[in-house]
Image (tube, rainbow, N blue to C red; front, side):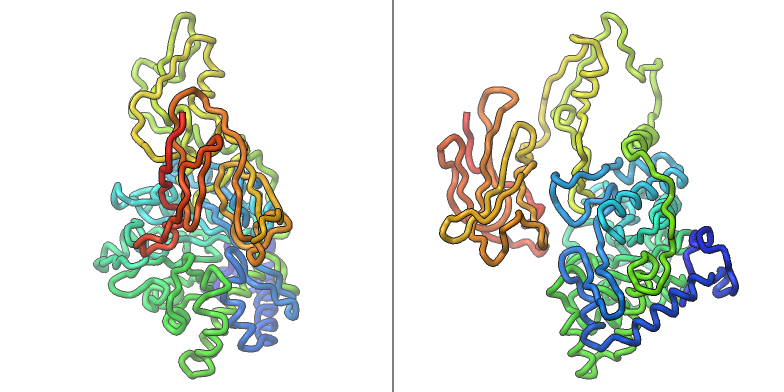
Length: 527
């Protein structure tokens, strides 16, 4: 059955036995019995289907055993939910690096409780977070999701985060296990790590979180470690994570990381995401029938998934670990507190900060980032806050009129930015004849519909083209560059003038996410 969450004893105080040195409650036993009863009712095909995502963010429901669909969401700095759109706003917290800079696990726990509150609001059962890889190189492409270069600090803050989220009855998925400390060639790179640094640096935060917070999930990474792909790494997953550390949660692949049916299931991978086309499902059932995989390995994975479902309260007959959520939290207030606590000053020379609005005192503000605030790292750390106050807007409001002077100066980036400020855009979906199927707002100009997240009336089967149309009011007159991002055929027109009409092919990138998150291409300029 494994070790129960330590914080669950607060909600279920009647501990009656001891296993592994931790009290097992009556509710733990009820969940265990419900999981075993549900598992016994499933045939091979259903079990294999349960281990494969039914779409981008969820696992299938199995009504015959009282199992609801399990919903996952990215969550390092906020809970996006299953929709990738500014029409579904979220509380955005400062980056995890800023959270760690406060040196306060209790603060991280409060942040976790807030994110559990957000997850419940959005119908999410499991957060795909925290990210506890290390800042091992300044070239790491996702450092904004990670806490620190120090494994002890990372483990302490990560434990606070996991405890806080699971205080709210929402599962966590500690990632990316392990050695995924850079993004370069992440699908193919082999992280060659000697035993001592592997234990003392890379594994240490995961080990601390398993011991101190008992996470309900873990995510295995794209990369290899010492020659073996992490989704197939029997030693690190089955022997170290599960047998040595006692981890009893579910193990989900990073998105599209699972590439071998037999290798992954024997390597301890429970769930292959996203779906429905994965190496599990029908392929896994066939591997069992062919004698390549013992059905007991499938049962072990399904048991882990059902245990997670029981803990979050979506398996019939199993009481959720948390039956009463913590007190409501003011999300905006906590986000502001986190931002303030994350500031680290080497020296506040002559008491320069905070700035005072003294008569005759002026402030010069320089740089494009002051005007267009970059508050998110991107990718899995992308959410859509209700509003963003840039340094220019905030200081302009706080200082007397005429006290603030702004200049862009040297802009270090020439990359096109999303079509948000000044734009009012809509997406119109049309069929092959040009008839309108449906339409919806497009706050950033980016069509990022995933799964069923399409405008009402539109479907993948009937939709032939998407027209993004609307107006742009520039902040200042002059030459402006316009472009596109994505794959396929595009036609771009501004003010009736066609700037580009062509096809953007897939490049040589090994990473399919390059097409989704890659850099835009400039297509023309208009004055």
